[in-house]
Image (cartoon, rainbow, N blue to C red):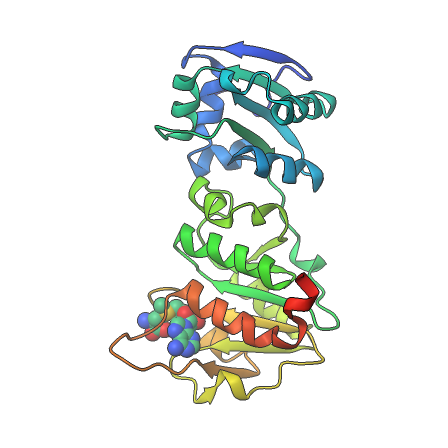
Length: 283
Ligand code: SAM
């Protein structure tokens, strides 16, 4: 495996047809967290996502596009922007693109971007800001869906607490549907989160199956809110539950023990953000 950036040819366009090409190997390796961390990079599929990411100022390292994209004005513009930003553009065949994305019918365009983390110290919720803190989230689909929902409701960002799945995993990025580029993500050990929480003057609302408070009875307004959600299998540990101002529960009927984490987060976010959202504002 080559060192990060070693195989980059800055600001170049290159045609690649071989799976043995070292740049292609580096991009394929991004399927594994170890190499994502090593390269400090990740992959996003689809022209719209790549354009959104460029518009939002993310640093593109490599744009990979299928030969079928030749002559497509939007693809060529994205390629020109990549070169202008000092990135590399790879024109590949369908075999290479399928290998990179591990999909039989891959998107026409794939972008390799630098990872971006928000330092926890920079998370300073104010006004009616809402942040979601996820305790040890394991499932990439859940994390991606939460990031997408945070974006949709106009919440400010996500704090990953403890050992969690990687927001830059291919499955997570896919599930965010592009919101990975719009939603700041911070990470912290449980200890660091608890220390940060002591300096946070807003409301920390934890969700718990043992909570005796109906989530609809709490006044979330006029102050920043951190919504704390528990791990898929174990829920919130005592250490985190004990640090919440309120522990709320979403009522259920039927046989299900609990809601899916991403669904519960969505239900909560719509309640917490209820006053801020209206169809008129988005019309
Ligand atoms: N067996 C786990 C437990 O005992 O908590 C179930 C966890 S549940 C799948 C994942 C997370 O979603 C929970 O920790 C909680 O944050 C949230 N959640 C799911 N259903 C909920 C409900 N009815 N009320 C409040 N939170 C809920």
